[in-house]
Length: 447
Image (tube, rainbow, N blue to C red; front, side):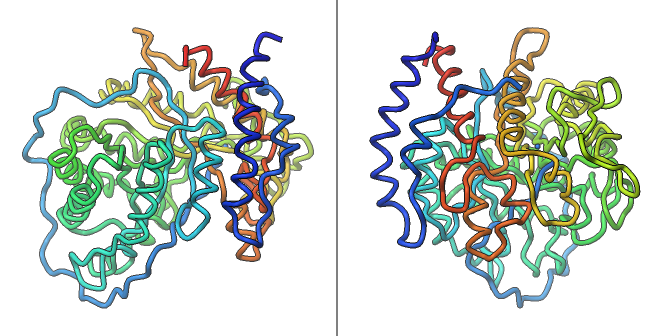
């Protein structure tokens, strides 16, 4: 047993934390059980994503939309020495830190071994009811608490205020989002380590109800404006091109396929995007497919799934975690291969009652743990020809949504099924497996 010393040192720290965690929670929520932590197993051998929704102070979107036309953002290049990179894969987790027991969530984050947290914010809940009126209060608490716990923070921005887009999709004028991110970075500075510009913008639901491949050019204009504003304030902050959803659908009322959207972004204005982002965010699917499988070369067979009348989520590359390899190929072919990829959502659902996520009913909690560890190992092995990682940071979806959904009376919601904590804050097998694997990896890296 070559890793006994690691396990004992982690156990000592965990036992010290248990009494503290009990004090962190409210009176209606159970603390992390000592017995479950003490018996943490070693890492396993062998995610489709959900869209997190941040809940913040709700603005009254009563101001009329602007009448000015959208401006062109990409005509003036930014002086840069190249995209920012990480020298090795780093690991993070998606969390919901609004109006919850942040002390407990962030403490559990550190115990698990994650060094990054991704928090999604709704722009419309921060700016309003009039333009340029910013309500930072609860986000202040999130940013300050994350920094106090020594975790790096990625902020993902979605949902424009109604006065910038009546449907809350991407703003019509790139400078409006530029103003917002500039104000945010002036307010927080280096406390925000990375900013992701939008989320799954190839989906109609994330783009105001309608999306075409031509919208990719408008997105590039917004990304470029935000990049310039952020870098002018905090040049060391990573700026991420938002992650298209892993989708093969081309229907303006539903989605543009991720391949078509990526290629449209990269080819817009002869590839002007290359100067305006540090890393490409991606959201690989997983359905019920193990992460080492891939379509069409090594497809998965989902035990118990009867394909008629529905498919078994195994007949298209976008249902597989290793679709990240396809996306890497798109990047290289389109001339942006010098940029890293960040996986800002991945994970595997378990049993749930949400239509469209039935694949989770074919994944046990132990399989979820095994698949997550397998995916972490795969990502840690992805290197370019020079031996450098082409994935910079990965964020597991998710930490604590089971707690939140149970409080809302939806314990079987799909978002809850992706979580690695139970509704009572106790660890699922995935949490314990991650804790063990990251401890081993830290030792291997000399940490």
